[in-house]
Amino acid sequence: MKLKNLKKKIRRLEKRLQEAPKKLARLKQKLQAAKAAKAMKAARKSAARATAAKSSTGAMKPSSVKKPKKKLNLSPERRAQLSAQMKARWAAKRAAEANAKGASSDNQHSGAQSSSQTPESRPDGA
Image (cartoon, rainbow, N blue to C red; front, side):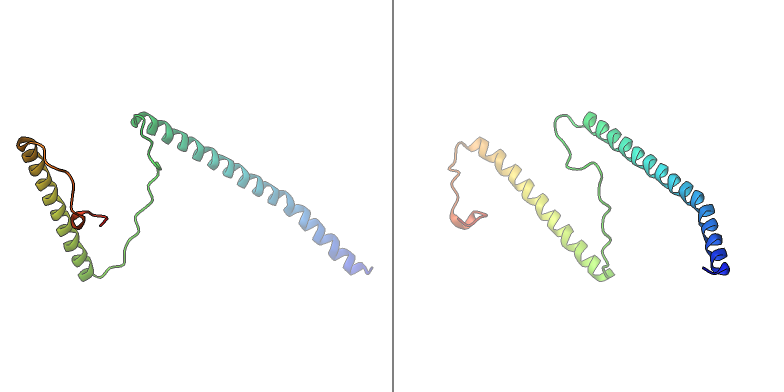
């Protein structure tokens, strides 16, 4: 082997050996940070479970962390249209509930009526 190549190899090896402790230290720091993050996450999760267990009496929530809502890319016209549709739907729902409450209070005073429905008025159509 030539003297020049040998010197190059030695220089590269020394450089690698000098960088190795730095790299090792950097990797150890990353490992330490990852462990700390995992422990914090587990502690936060257990704390959330504990508060959920205290707040709920028997009923378990499906998930304690809510997903962020997706922002819809709507034009202002479409947004206004959807808003109007939803408001109309909610108004119809409130009116139906009010009618149902009024009808149920009338039914209690008028006596027993048959609860069978005609097939046309059933929601499932059967």
